[in-house]
Length: 351
Image 1: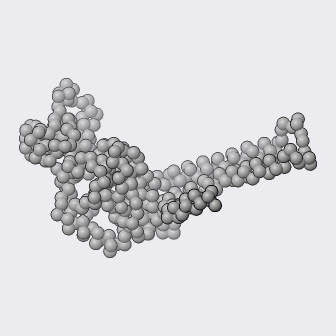
Image 2 (image 1 turned 45 degrees about the horizontal axis):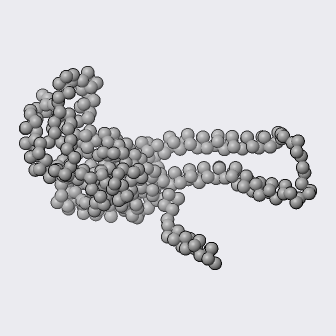
Image 3 (image 1 turned 45 degrees about the vertical axis):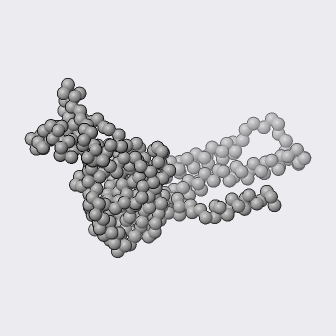
C-alpha cells in the first residue's frame, strides 16, 4: 500500500493535465500531431517485436529449459539478416518520404491552401496579418489592418487564415502557441513568418519556447480564438483605448520588464513595425536597409567611421528613457528626398 500510494498521488496530479500538442485546435497543429502519430507507429513496428522477442528468447533459452536447441557453433542466418535489415530500411524510406513531403507542405512560410482537412481556403479570403515583436520580456502584437496594438494578448477569428510577421527587439526568442502551430524563432533585424489558422473558439496559451534571460519564465500571453462577431467586438474594445503606440512609447515599452499586464493601444504610429525590423525607431538613426544599401554601393569610407550618434541626456530624460540602456548607432543621412534632419541637434530637438 505504501508503495502504490505515491503512484496514485502522481496519477491524480497528471489527471488535470491537457496534452495540448496531441489535442490541438488549429489545422497546422493537427497535421503536425498526425506526423507524431505516424512516426511513432512506424518506429513501434521495430520496438514492439524487439520487446516481445526479448522476453520470448529469455524464457525459451533459460538454463532450466532442456528442450531448447543448443547450437554453440551457429553464426549466420540469411532469413534473420533479411528481416533485421529490410524492415528498418523500409521504415527509414517511409520516414524519409513523409519528412520530405511534410517539410514542404508545412513550411511556415508557405501560405495556407486549406483551413481544415475537408475545407480549402475560400478564394476571396483575406488573411489576418499580425506583426509580432518579441520584447524583453513581453510580446507586442500589431494589427496593421485595424491600426491597433496589444501587449501579451492576441486574438483572431475562427477559420480565417492568419499571417504572422515576426521579429525581435534584442535576443532571439521563440513564438509558440501549441494549439495553433509549431514554434518559429524571432530574431532582431530579421523577419520570420508563420501561416496558421485556428478552427475552434477558445482561449489558448502562448509563450516563448527559447530561453531569453531573467524574465523568460513570465513571457506568456493569451490567444483568443473567436467568431467574427466576437473578434469585431474585441477590436472595438482595443480601439477605445486612448493610449497611442508612438515611437517614443515603443522605446519606453522596449525597456526590459517582467510579467507585464495586458495593454491596449488604440492607435499605432505609421511604419512602426518596419522601423523596429530595420532597427531605426529613433528618428535620427539610420535604418538597417539603408546601411546595407550603402554597403552594397561601396560604403561611406572614412566618414562612415565617425557618422555616429546617440540621444543626449536631455532628450533621454524628456522621453523617460533614463533607465534604458544608452545606444550608440549610425546616424541617418539627410537626402534630397528627406532633408529634415540636417544636424544631430535638430534630430534630438525633433524628438
